[in-house]
Every structure is written in C-alpha cells, then in structure tokens.
Image (cartoon, rainbow, N blue to C red; front, side, top):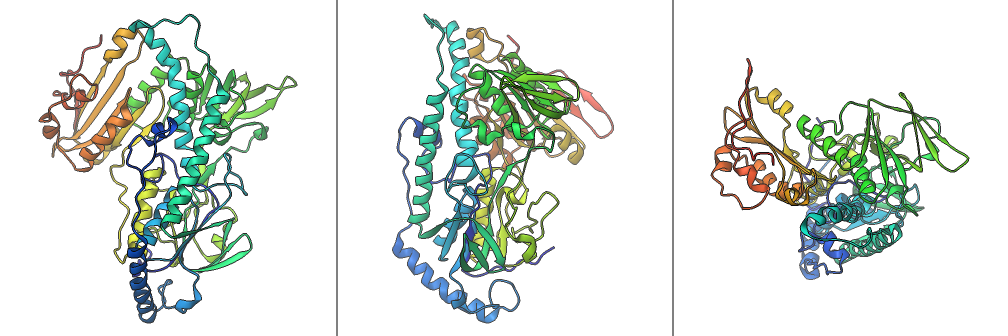
Length: 563
C-alpha cells in the first residue's frame, strides 16, 4: 500500500477536462434540499461563504506551515523537493465538477492558494468542451431529474381521472419547451458554480489540462506549477465497438435532442438506461430496452430488480432480455435498425447506455508514472493518493463508488488530508443511492445475497402493497419494501424500496443504517400515518429466516395486504 503523508496546509492545483460523477444534484451549498425543482420555478438559492479576512489570515498561517514542512520533509513528493517560491499554486485541480469544486473550495478555506482548470461549457461533452459543474450538473443527474419531472406528468394526468379530473382533449407535450428551459437552468448553474469558486478565492483557468511532471500542468499552452495536483475529471459514456456505432446516441445527446423520438431503442440494463426508458415512455415515446442479461440492474437486490422491471412493463416499456447488439444500420428513410443476437428492431433513435469509463485520455498520467487500470481509471490509496505522491484523484475517475455525493465526500477528505493536516479516509460504507425510474428505487446497505454471504444468518422482512393513491386511480402501481437484518446482532444491514418517493424516504433511513440501528429500534419508532414510509417501521414478522445450515421461510406477518 502506498504511504500517506499528511501535509500541513499544502498547496494544490485543480485541472479541468470536463465532468465528474453522477448521482446527486450539485455542490451542497444551498439551503433547500429540493433546490433543483425550486430553481426551475424561480426560487432563489441562498449561498453563504466564509469571510475574506478570516481566509486571508488562515492563508498567512498556512504559508508559514508550508515553509516549515518544506524545510523538514524529504522525498515525500509534496514538500521538500522544490523551494516554496517555485509554485504558482498550493493546489491545481483538473476538473471543475462536483468533486473538484468541493475539494478546491475546502482547500481554499483551509488557507491554500488554489486554481481549477475546466473546459468551456457545452451541453454535450467532448475533447474541447465541458463546463464548470461537471457531468452531474450539466449532463447527468440535474438535467436528467428535470426530464424525469417532466415525464411524470403523463402518468399523473392518467392517475387524476380517478380523483375526478377530466380533460376535453388529451394534454400535449412540447419537447422543445422542456429542453430549452432545462438549458436555461444549466446556464444559471454554470454561473452559480463560477461564483462558488470566485467567492472562495479559487482561480478558474479555462482550458484543457495535461500533466507534464509531478508538479506542472499545461493548460491549453499555459504552464502552471503546483505543490499538489488533484485529478477530478470524471468519466465519459462508453459505446461498444460494433459496426454502425457512429449512428447511436448516449445520455449526453439524449438530454439535448432537437425533438422527441416517436420510437427509441435503448441498449443497456443499468440505471441510466432505465431512467431514460421511463423518461421517454412517460413523454409518449414507444420504448424498447435491450438487456444482455436476464434481469435489469446488476448488483441491486434481486427482488428489487424483478419488481422494477414488472412495474416498468406495466407502464408500457418493452423489455428484450438476453439480447446483445451486433450492429446498427441507417436506412434511406432516416430510421435506424438495431441488430441483436436474436433479431432486429427499427426505431427513430438508438441509444446506448452500456457503461462509462474514466476520462483520462491524453492527461499525461502514464508519462509521469501515475498508475491506471486497463479501463483507464486512476489507482489510488485509501486517502485518494496516486502512485505519484504529489498527484491525487477523487470521483468517478477512480472508479470506486461512482456517485456525486461520494465525489463530494472524497473531495472533503482529500482537503482535510492534503491541506488541513488531518488525514481522513473516505468512508464508502453504507452509501444510500437512488434510481430515478418510474417508480423510483431507494436503497442503502447490503443486498440479501451480500448479507447472507457476509453474516450467514439473516432475517428478511418484505412487504408488497398497493399504495393509497393507486386504490383511487385504479392503476396497477405497487410498492415494494425490504429490510435485511443480521440475526445475531439484530442490526439492520440493508433497506431497499421501489415505489413513489423512494429516494426521499431512503435518505432518512440511510442515516439509520449508517448508525447501525437495530430492528428493535426500527420497531420502537412510531410511524407517520398515512404514509408508505411507515411500513418500514411496522414490519414485525420476517418473511424468511436464512441460516447457514438451512433456510426457513415463514409467513409475512405485518405486511400491508394487497388491495
């Protein structure tokens, strides 16, 4: 394992080639949890920053510490290998996404002189375009969630009939209006992120960064020297090398199409593929999803995987399991044919959501000795340090847990370690996450298979029910919940849900699982009525008890009966 040296108030530089992480909305500097939705309807964001005077005082003290470290450190890759005056910055960060901005802001607040390098803004990333805010804010979670909101109305109109609403004609959707308003919001957020950097005295340098040596970065022809370099460039969509791949789109293009396709084929069974499937289906498109395996969402709990696919199919999504793409052909009529191992399908657009890879091409990493794996992901130690002591990396580019809140957490841990003289390891245990399909998924902790493998003896509580809203709408919507308990300690080690408001509900239960609360403590909690969430504190009898020697299935007492 690589050695980790905590540097007191050291200098770091941030370089940007565009993009970082997915999974949460943006830099967490707002007073509103639902800031994306409120921003769309025009509510303001309230930002607060530390005062300049205090930061300048911290920086002055930090400079003394840096000089002391330089005098006493030999060969640690950060201090002692160059005179203090040789550096333009304490930190240069390559990548102005969520992780890079968070790390740079915290580093500056700890007294470091910081610069961030990022490419010019564009809704679609390329080798020459990116934008402050990164993947999540500009072409990931935020624009996707806006489209999710828009697509939900299609189902809401249908549900409203049971509640007495009627329409003289079927509501019509204007795709261009949605995309234009989404792009206006992205432009606003780019300004918000630039202000975050400016108000924290972080220098933004626009251009493409390339590492020349352990302390030098070339930014579109301009060379800057930094005591430490942080790489936070995120990832890019990966399209398999098959004939006709030039005809497909990825999630980048899907968020900025000039018009909505009447029919679309989506290749992939992960969360990105399924989220876009429900977006287009909700807006009225015919959607076909091609999945190589026999189930969607590899790595998620098995029951959640099956339940979601069933619910999506009820809403009109067509699944093709056990099919892999072999070619994409363009017809003379402008339509496209997806050829698979089992047949073919003609559509207006073919979208591939078949994974992502680290955006490390032409960064100069290998030339300076930074170790990367075969997919290009940067290898780091438990403190986010690479094989070159003065170069660090956080976020999707390291391929640890590819979620935006994780990149934020890793960025803060890095700042504490490299700048704050407080070695901090990112904690990747019990990270809650969501899939914004319709219905959405919320999950935290271990799957049933993982818990059984780790603990051997587990109790599993499940409940599948028709929520109150569906009893009036008459639609087939259902909700599924699952709690997994270590039988020997009674500690809840996993909570999974698929149904309306799953993501909002799971944030709170994520705290409970992280705190290692027991099932008895769940049971002692008084529920909020009438809500779906109360079911998670009222499931009294296990659906099954699984033991090392044998499994015993018992009746699901306490479950809400199907209506």
